[in-house]
Length: 139
Image (cartoon, rainbow, N blue to C red; front, side, top):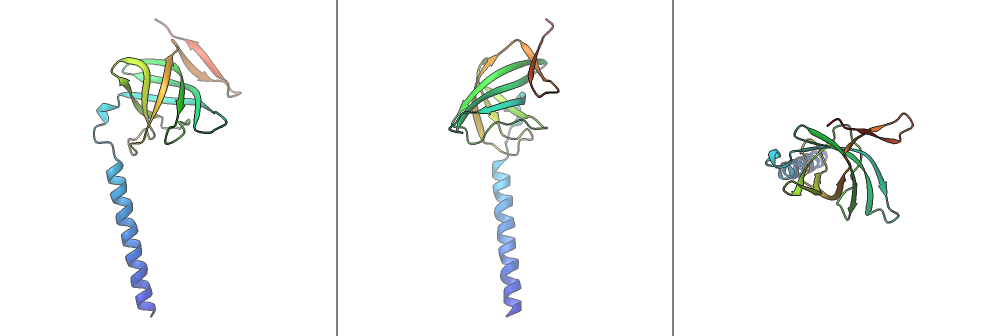
């Protein structure tokens, strides 16, 4: 009896591992060059419903770094500050009004969140009291 239990346990483990690996492989972004933006979310505020909100981010587009405010609604995840940052792309070419943000900066998850963005002409920093501080950019 104990032999059949360990065989069943081994089988369940193998099936779980194969399922996990196949899901992981299917979720990878095939072409990272399609996501040229490096996005650092600095602060996110949730609306009462929890499905929408707004926040602050710094966006690195090539060699240009600029702060942005953003709004989102109905995303499959909440865009939050992370150590790694995120990757993204402009939805309509270089029109910098709507950004598609990928949840993981390492490209491990292809869930996108649409952010309505407004570029601010500043770079944001975080003060010791965790307040967002705009810094003027040199032109």
